[in-house]
Amino acid sequence: MKRIIVTRFSAMGDVAMVASVLKEFVAQHSDVEIVMVSRKLFAPFFADIPRIHFHAIDPKGKHKGVFGLYRLFRELKNYKSFYVADLHNNLRSRFLDFLFLTSDYSVRILDKGRSEKKALTRRENKVLKPLKPTTERYADVFRRLGYNLKLDHELPRVNREAPEEYATIFASGVKTIGIAPFAQHPYKVFPLAKMEDLIRQLSEKNYSIFLFGGGAAEKEICANWSNQYDHVINTVGQYSLAQELDIIANLNLMVSMDSSGMHMASLVGTRCVSIWGATHPYSGFLGYGQSLEDCIQVAHPARPSSVYGNKPCNCDGVEAIDLVTVEMVVEKIGS
Image (cartoon, rainbow, N blue to C red; front, side, top):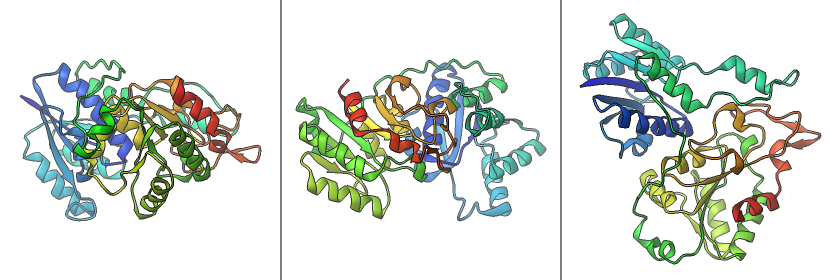
């Protein structure tokens, strides 16, 4: 059986998209095993995919720096594979690629489409058109290794058992909504005052609301909301990543920004309503199988200003994501 070493170290949403692609790949190629190289935290994304061996990279420990990457290279050589799919194309992965190439591995590297994305996000002469989805860019790497791969871009529901304490809620018939209020970059975050208003309105409709996120500050914010409003459950810091996926798989709907919450919903087949500001679904980062119709955004000549949400997007004195109203989100949730 052939093996392919696949590298994608971060970020969470990008790694989740890799998992969506690998589900399709292993289903279409029963004679291939995958060695997935990523951070230990992301292992649950791949746990239920057959013929995947997860190999954790420890970039702050034993795999730190040039010598650490050489150690990782020696570890990966033990799998006796001669194929490498670099789905990251950053400094670390390219150094690994160099080491593999010197050992006669067949290496293919992700084309990030930087020039197209620059044209999409520049201020002058912006080219506003849909770019190739990131998942298709990942698939192209396998195609260049010689494998046929057809992505269906559908959203099949995944059967996962929710934590026992929520069994009654999910069996009650009450609409269940997950909300991921945070993102890595500030210009992708729906203003917290608006997010609280959204949670209040959904609470008043007697929906059951599950809040997701990470970090001490986020945990405190979500705890305050869950204490203040009925039917609001704070999951932050309470569950493992695998258990969070269990909960999301049982939701009727997820609400997220352009962030990992959307991609986690895609992994388990849950519809996601996503909120966009400085970024844009045209850049290729819409969740796998998610619908463009479920993207909430306001058209403006300045949008998008950024691929990753790390740059502001001034729309006539208003940050782009602040153009989205709570009413727009409530209406979409109810549709």
